[in-house]
Image (tube, rainbow, N blue to C red; front, side):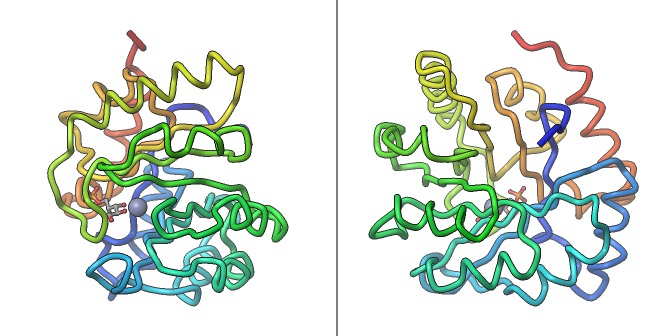
Length: 227
Ligand code: DX5
Ligand code: ZN
């Protein structure tokens, strides 16, 4: 995977579903390469979003787009195959939703997708430390999962620092992704903490001009100087 880091990953949870194709194209026109798909089942989180059929439609818009699927569902093992068949390039699962997380990560990889582990704001980094050698990405929730448009939780940056230190100490290469409450004001500060992939939903899709907003956020990311 040869993306120029850090990466902006617009979340289509915030898109107008009546114009999803047009809005995803607008995001791609703005230079975004990742599309973040938030899958919610109304059980693991108190909201229901969309399923593999929507992911399939999105992945058919462009074969360049990297489809980053975030499963906020119970029993994710049951759905790994259908999201891979729908075109997921990476599937992230919540530690808190998996009884046998190591086996779930193996299952995702066996279907040819890259693997991610996600933790909620109250879950410590120590809980996923044994998995950091097994995954391609670690996703830190910077809001409580289930809804877009929430405030960024600043304490998440401490967890980013811990992950960066562990990655260096053990010479690992997993990506660090942040998800929730990212906007024009905090995006550079978050990237400076060492985040590789930044999810943005409302900041992108509530903008007057989606393409220009993506271009603006991307240029903030490409011009920032790490600390
Ligand atoms: C929340 C989702 C996030 C959310 C981000 O459960 O995982 O991806 O859609 O939306 P914003 O950027 O609006 O906080
Ligand atoms: Zn998400």
